Length: 181
Image (cartoon, rainbow, N blue to C red; front, side, top):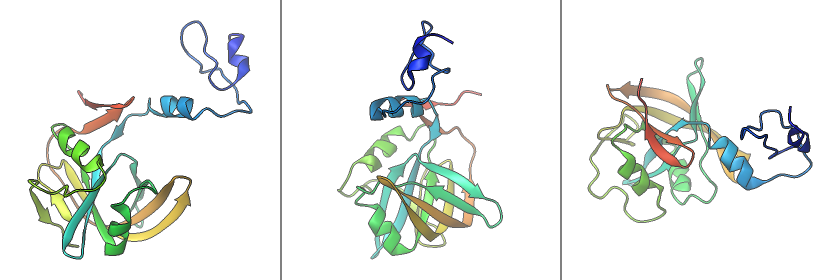
């Protein structure tokens, strides 16, 4: 272990690694984003119907949670203007984006406006939009939301799902990428 590793969070050795770093009394939010940015995630768009209008937002914080009962988790930001509308609907659909849907992801990441203009979709059993071209979709009933700092940690019960052939859109180190097996 290098001498700098003993300095705690953010200590980097001569090779650019800080795997030997120990805890420290300070916290650097920028460093937190940098390190967690090294975890590749899939990209989703969460959708619902609220007052007969489609609503949705881009969400990369999505994961399977339980097989029995079938549950998923997602983490919308508390600043989201779309999430409160989705909660009001009581159910939602998580659309797993395909590698050619980066532009769609960016469109749904912007707050406000009619995100569905020119976007093809069909209704899931719960009425939520299943987006054309999505690699997969997971229809859910809202179960509970927990406070999680500047986000909410949301649990949804899976009601139905589907998948098609293709490759996923990935997010890694602040940018989009593709998966090559």
